Image (cartoon, rainbow, N blue to C red; front, side):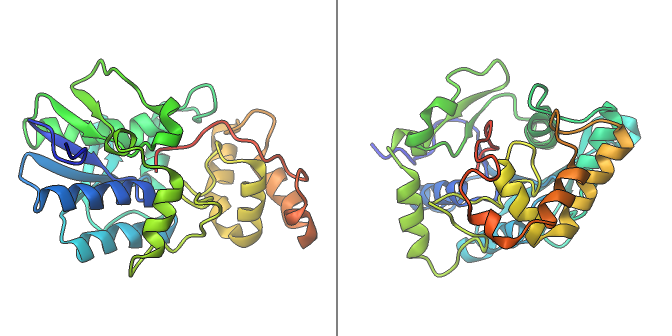
Length: 273
């Protein structure tokens, strides 16, 4: 049995823009050839991904000849909805995320992590139900065997989960070896087969070590996050004011970024790659 063969019925393939979900997509394409209309590949853009992530999604589209539906959270008529876009029209300034925060009137945080659900999962669901009329489907999610603890076994919504990487015993080492052999790759650093700059650039789930490095290398990209904290009057992470944290990180000498433990290395989790 090939774990990458499409299950029966409608299938949604969630492509986050990372190496893991791209690996999953590649192997599904290899196992099934051109995907039927009952299978849709979707990428939900928050507006805070690094430009290299958007480039990578587009390269996968072109090099593998697979159509990908680009979705963004939107609020037409003041109600939660979505906007269909593409590589050229994808937002790069955080507008989908900003529209969500203004509607919620508070920031996502460790306790209330509504950003992934509201910016990615629900817009994709709305599209499949409204545009395609789907009632139920299988949702392919790129969770590896070495992160099996993240796999949900049950869904109370319209979909059931499909984990082809988990079922195939794929590890992050396998992902790394695969991309080293390809003629293109995500142009974001690969540290121990992880992508520190993946997902939203200054995501509050990333470790202080990663955020400090980001603040040093990409100071312009933190401006949006600082502005959101000031506008709402709270912080994405309790006890960490981003403006103060970034100011501190940028004033440090380079050696502290290589000093293990100088900045906190731990994190609480991450979005699915």
